[in-house]
Length: 550
Image 1 (cartoon, rainbow, N blue to C red):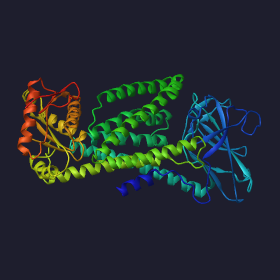
Image 2 (image 1 turned 60 degrees about the vertical axis):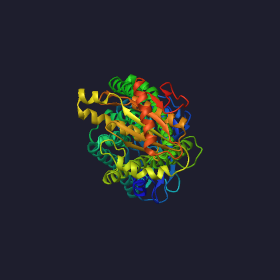
Image 3 (image 1 turned 90 degrees about the vertical axis):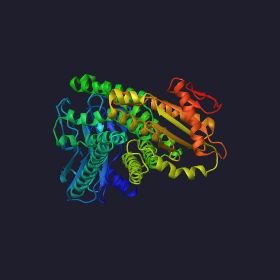
Image 4 (image 1 turned 90 degrees about the horizontal axis):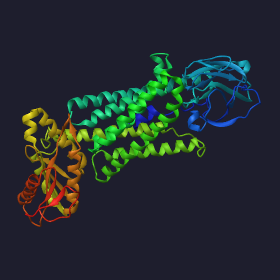
C-alpha cells in the first residue's frame, strides 16, 4: 500500500521553490482596466494567484493588469521569471519593461489569439533593481470573463534555477499523466480477463479521464496542436464525464444499484458537452458555459463524491474488503481540500495543494482494487471460489461454516433462487445465463459484509449466512439483496430472485436450518416470485416481504 501512495504523492507534489528561487504564489493586486500597469490612476484590488477570476467573484471582460513585487539580491546575475498557464493571452513586464508574452493582443486590447501556455522569461539586467522591490506586471485579456493566472508555480530567481524547477515540474506532470494512463490500461486488461468484475472497467474510465484532465490543465495539449480549443476540450470533456465515472466505479465496487444516478449523470453529461461544443463554435455562448455549466459540473462532482463517501462509510462499517484504504484516501483528500479552500479565503498563510490529496485518494482506490483482486485470486487458486460468480463453492462454504456456527449471537440464512432462469437459458442461450449468474454473484458480494458467507449453492441458487442478524435484520438484508438484484441489468437482461429466510434455532442441525429456508423460498416462488418469505412469523420489511408459517 505504502509504495503506491508515496509514488502518487511524489508525482502530484506541487512545484516547490528551490533554494535561491522565490515563489510568487499568493496575494497579488489586480486592476480591471487598461489604463497602464505603471499608472496610479484607477483602483487596485487584491486577488489570489493562482485563481481564475470568476471563481474569485470577478465578473469582468476586457484587459486587466496583475502585479506583485520581489527582491533581487545580486546585481549582474541572469534572472528569470516563470509564468504558469494564464488565461487567455498575456504580456509580461518587469519594472515597466516588456519581456515577453503569450498569445496576441491588439493595441486596443482585443484578443487576437489565445495561448494559455506558461513560459520562463529572462529578465533584462538593466531593468532590475538589486536590493529593491521589483514590480512584476502581467497585462492579460479575459475571455468572456475567464482570466487570471490559473495554475500554481509562479517563480522568480536565477535563470538556471528557475528553468530547472520548470523542467522538474514538467517531469512530475508527465509522471502523473503516465501513472493514470497506465492504471487505466492495466485495469482494462483486468476487465478483459474477468469481465464480471465491472469495477475494473469503470476504474479504467475514471483513470483515463483523470489523465486527460491533468494533461489539459497543464497545457500538454499544445504538444499536439496550437489550437487553444483543443486544449479546452482536453480539460472540459473529461471534467464533465468525471461525475459519471466516479458514481459508476463506486456503485460497481460496492455493488450498489445506481440506475437513476447513472442515467441522470449521462443526461447531465450530454447537456454539458453540447454546451461546450456550442460555446467553442459561437463564442458569445461561452459565459453560459463558464458561469453556469462549469459551476454545476463542480457541484454535481461534489454531490457524487458525497454519495460515494456515504457508500464507502457504509462499506467500512460493514468491513467490506477495500473500503478501509478508500476511507484513508478520502480523509487525506478532504483535509487538503479544506486547507486549500482556507488559503483561497486568506485563512491560511501557506497554500496546500489539494492535487496531492486527490492523487492519494486515487492511489488508495488502486490499493483497494488490488486488495480485492489478490484475495479473490487466492480463493480461486484454493478451489474455494466459484470461477463464474466469484462466490464461495460448496467446499469453500463448508470450510468456513464451523467457525460461523461456533460464534455467539443470532444466526440467520437466506436462500435465493433466480426467477425464470431456465427461460433465460432456453431463449437467450447458456452464455447469457452465465452472464446473469456472474452479475448476480457480483451484486451479492458487493452488498454483503465481509463477515457474511455467500455461496453458489446450486445451478441458480445462492445461500447466504448472516452472522449476528436477528430475524428482523435478516429480512432487511434480504430486502436489500432483492432490491439490488431487481435493479441490475446485464446486457439488456433484467432478472429477479425469490428469497427464503430462516433463523437458526438452538442446537439445530445445519441441514434442517437450510431446509426451512428452502421451504420459505419455494413459498416465495408460489407467491409470485421477486419477493421474500420467512420460515416463521416475522415483522414485514418492505412491501415485498411477508411471513409464512412452516
